[in-house]
Image 1 (cartoon, rainbow, N blue to C red):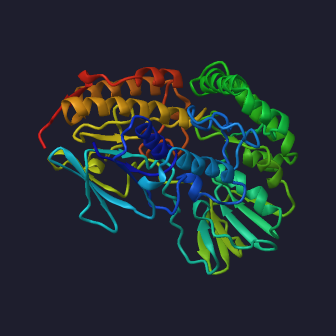
Image 2 (image 1 turned 180 degrees about the vertical axis):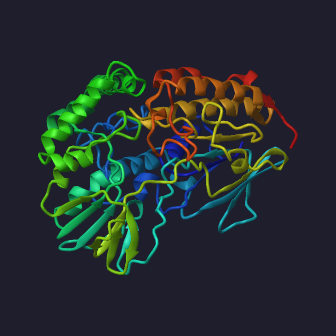
Length: 477
């Protein structure tokens, strides 16, 4: 059985490791960039890091005792993924700098075409591990700026010391990079459209003694990881479902804002008017203090146009800049774009998803046999580690490979997809993401296509093994 894996981030590496451990070694990992790591390879902006604790933001089967701090920075996460690629012998299967352009289902197999090889190669199974945060979103603003401008995920390492910098956006990436940039820049203008709720980050270094204990007392590391998991499930998730902790999180966020921002006018600009969790919650302790620096201005007027020397806002004010940084997030709801995906009977995946992406268990789509998605529709988490979800999915897909080997190509039934859709819609009604705010969790029409609306434990349970009754086997090619 030949398996194509698209993407070499957490999802792609996890899938490859599962195959290796099962003795399936006829697989190829296609990666468009020059190294493994996915988003952690792409995002090299100052201050880049994770807001999930390191011992939970890692594979359960590849625990790492030497994390230097509770919340890992980008270089350490990337080093961990590089170590996993080496430890499990994945390098010979990697095709770096190879962008997949099309997937075409023909006679029970998938043709994987790349920019360098449009004719493609044939595989029995295709696994998409491209993730949800890989295509930068840059807003359309009229005019032209003559200086350097770039997205945070495509950081250009200019020396910004003593320069005037405009940062468009104030989400998670902005919260991490603004303190770093403001420390050396002459001035930073932060263009904020809608403020996020911000919680303080309880970060800390792991000293030599604790790291030694994690390394030589494995039950300690397992217990710590288990505590992190259960804390996220019992304290954070209920806040997004209108449960007991929603008021507590709001009070904590408001207290953090009041303590960090003494100026009532600035506090007003930074106070959201929607429930906690409707948009992604920022977990960072340095963001608010950075916004109070004398060399930082928070601007809430809309941007009218770019000029050769900066930006002009809707009130007619000119804001000079030497560089512009777009911290404006990603194109998150167009799953698998821009890859052309053609399934059974010529079905176009993106046409099928015209009103919003959906997949059975977040992994399988009717009309697309032997195609599986990792970190697909409705599998993102707002409260814990996506690595947990990826491990559930790769375990499930391994079960599917066994069924394919014994029964032939498998395709999820339309009836199973309908039942799944109804269950999702019912669960989603209770979630805070449905409140009146714009977020990367949902489409322009308001449909939530990204987030999982139940506890992680439920997802683990329903993906423990594939149900053959939900699939049909050996469909017409």
